[in-house]
Length: 253
Length: 285
Image 1 (cartoon, rainbow over the protein chains, first blue to last red):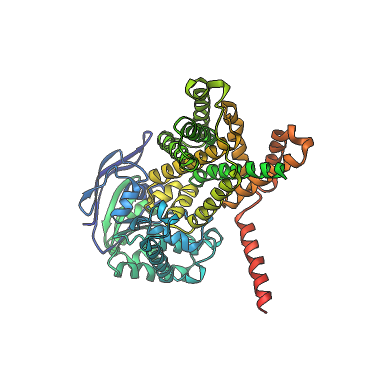
Image 2 (cartoon, chains in turn orange, blue):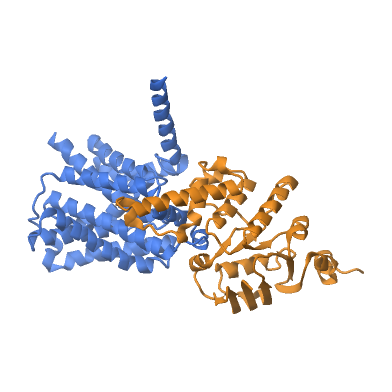
C-alpha cells in the first residue's frame, strides 16, 4: 500500500466534510475517487497533500505517518498533485512553471545564482531545463514552452500542471478533475496520457466526473457521499452497486 | 555640474532602496520597514568608521550584514502574517528603530551622529552597487531560487504544494532585502557626513514603496526606473519641490487607474526586446 488513509475525520467549524474514511491506495494502480458534488473528494486530496490538517485519523504514505508534515516535505517524499481550478504561476513562462516542479529535487541556493563559479549550479540548471522540456514533450506541449502560462487555453494549462507535478518525479500523483472542461477528443488523449504515467510505475489517484474516463482506466474506484465512503471496487462492481446508483440518481419510488 | 552629480548620487542610493523594497515584495511581502533597515545600516557603518576606525568598504558591508541579521529576526514573526498586518508590523519596526536612534546616546541621540568621514567617490560606489544588484536580479529571474520567490509571490499555497519551502524563501527574501537597505544606508551616511533619526522616518519608507509601485513591480527594472524618475523630476522642477509628496500621491492614483502594474511591466520589456532584435535583424539584412 503506497497510501493508507485511516479513520480520517475533517471538520470545518462543526461541518463534517470527511467522516471516518478508511481507504487504501495500492502501488502502481490507477485509483479513482468519485462521488456527487460536495462529497468531500477535494477535501480528502487537500488532507493528503497537506493543505489542511485533519481533525482526527492518520494518513500514511509509503508507511510513513504524514500527519502534520508540511506540504513541501510531502512533495519531497513523492506526492505530486494538480488542482481542480488550475493554479499555474501566471507571470512565468510555461517552461519555468514546469522547472519549478523539480524545485525540491535540486539544490542551488541564492548565493549560487549570483556567484557563478560553481559549475555544479550551472549544470543543475541545465539538467532542470532539459528535464522540464522532456515533461512538456511528454504532455505534448513543447511548442508552448516560452509562452506566458496564463495565456494558454484552459485545457493546455491543465496539461502544464500535470507536467509540473511530474517534474517532481512523484511516486503518487493526485489528479483533481483533470478532464474538467475538455472535449471528447482531449479526454481521449488525457486517457492515454494517464495510462502512460501509470505504466511508468507511478500510482495515480484521481478525482473525476467523466464516467467514461473513470470506468475505462481505473483499477479501483472508491465512491464518496456526504463525507463517507459508500462503496469501493472495480469498475463493473461500482456500476452495479445500488448504493452508488442511489447516491447519483436517487432512490426508486 | 556638482549639483547634477549630487542629485545622481542620491538617485543611485534611492535605486538601491527601491530594490531593497522589491526583494521581499517578490515573495509577496510588503515592507514599510526599509527606512528602518537603512537607518541600521547607516548608523552601523558610521559607528564602524567613526568609533572603530574600520575602512569604508568593510564598514558598509558590516552595516549591511547587521541590517540583514535584524531582517532575519523581524522576518520570523513576519512569516505568520500577511497583507495589512505585515504592513503594520514593518511600520512599527521602522518607528522602533527611529525611536531607539533618538534615545541612543552612543550615536548622538536626537542631535544626530556627526563627523562621519566623507566618501568623495560615493557616486561610483552607489552605482557600483546598483550594477551588482542589476546583475543579481537579472540572474535571479533565471535561477532556482528566483523562480521559487516568484512562485511564492504569485501563489503561496500552490508553491508549497509543489515542494517550495515557503518559510525559508520568504525569510531569505526579507533578510536579503534588509541587507540591501543596510548597504544603501551605509553609502548614504558616508555621503551626508552626518545622520539623524529624522532622515529615516516613515515617509521615507513610503517613498521607497512609491518608487517601486510607480516604476513597476513585475520586473526589477520597474523600481530602478521609478527611483530615477521620481528623484530627478522634483529636482528639475524646483517649483514643485515642496509639493513632492502631493505629486507622488497624485501620480499613484493616476497609475492605479490607468496602469496598475507600473510604468515598466513585463510587456514593456518584451516590446523593447522585440524592438532591439528587429533593429539587429535589419542590420543583418
